Length: 399
Image 1 (cartoon, rainbow, N blue to C red):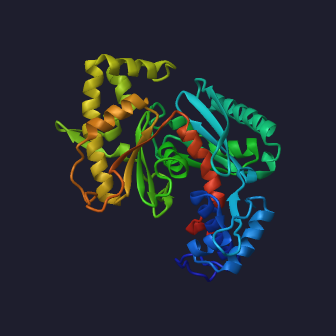
Image 2 (cartoon, rainbow, N blue to C red):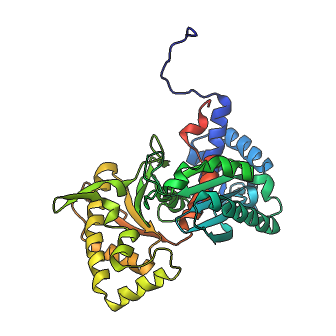
Image 3 (cartoon, one colour):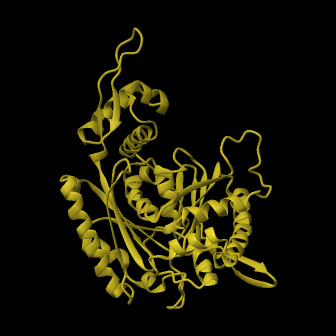
């Protein structure tokens, strides 16, 4: 014993931490609203004009904001709007899925600048890791061609793959990508790229994309139900993405449902994997989405039966997350074809009663979000931007 007992407490902050937090507050205000004057920023953030002036000078010196032409309003002094400099920072996002890997480079405001993808070979991470590192190196070379300053302004590498993380699973479990889970992925990527690397599940990454660029933009409370090979949920609570103790918050696909006396995970009934299984399709077929659309258009009985069953389960899922998390809206997003997503959203209605039924609602209870195969990689890319520049409680702590 060293004479000190373990004491549980939150970490405090100091003037440097408060200043860093206030910088992030100003950056977020400009991201959400576009160009604003110093007076606008002081009024909106409740910081003093002198504090705002000092911080804006610092941000401008760091190349993160720039001033625009002065604007005269009425008889007063002209005001100078400030905006974010898109080229002030960059980040890379990587999606690792069962058959493909995708990478995206974005700037400070989330513009996708370069994209690249490659099929993942059989053999798991032992062969796939080299494919990924080669893909990332090629992406960075392409990014340098259009933004030579990008290497010195890279905020990091965000990685997204199916969860849950840290659980024991059979090596042949198709839902959890167990071989990739057991591989020292983050260490390999950090060593191979020289970047700070962070991991989140694909549902959380899609929610991150929705928060920065999509249907959750400007919202503080939203739940994004992600439809992919499995099913998950990204939880935006109090303006931040909630990850949970082990990065597994929102794994609603693992919730057990009982039907005809048999218990099975929710995602075994309402995911692309369950649809492929019912229709006898190959998930790795590059033409699989076109086949799904054709079956919808043809009124295929197997497809319609799956839609009816999945819509019933998703109706329950919407009710559950509304009751648990009280979001402003529930966002349906993922990688299913948009035609299928629209049909599902239509068949999910009418929604079950919940505490979301309010007279003062301004948003629909269920909103369609991104249905784009690049959404997860995009969300993975904007995560390092958020980690570096968004106001977060953890950012002000002495840790």
